[in-house]
Amino acid sequence: MSITRIKSGGPFEAKIGYCRAVVAGGFVHVAGTVGQGDDVVTQCASALAVIEAALKDAGTTIAHVVRVTYMLPDAADFEACWPILTETFGANPPAATMIVCGLIDPKYKIEIEVTAVLPD
Image 1 (tube, rainbow, N blue to C red):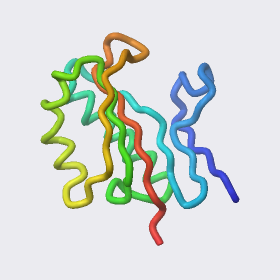
Image 2: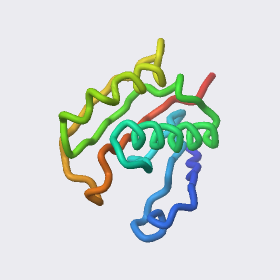
Image 3: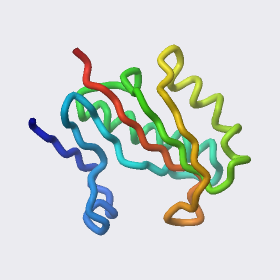
Image 4: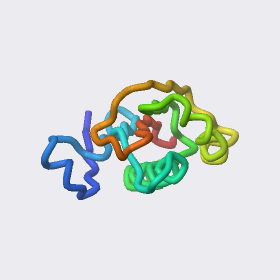
């Protein structure tokens, strides 16, 4: 099986030892992604844009996402993200999990991780 690693060039990839996405076995696994901005909705949109770019680099799209995990330090913030998540995934919603946990830096309000399939 071939494995392709997709790097974003972000500073933490080398520091921590990971890459933005890995393509293997017909799947694209995108690492947990935080976004930029001052509030959870802006960070959510920013993280999704980074994820969409990684999926494009891997040869797939957001419509092919089959699994998503949302990680938030504050569960109360999640509902504010629902409209953008519904808009993003639309008629192709993935299986989803939301976890309440600490993130690497207190400024981050959401981290998103996805798994997608490669199109036929």
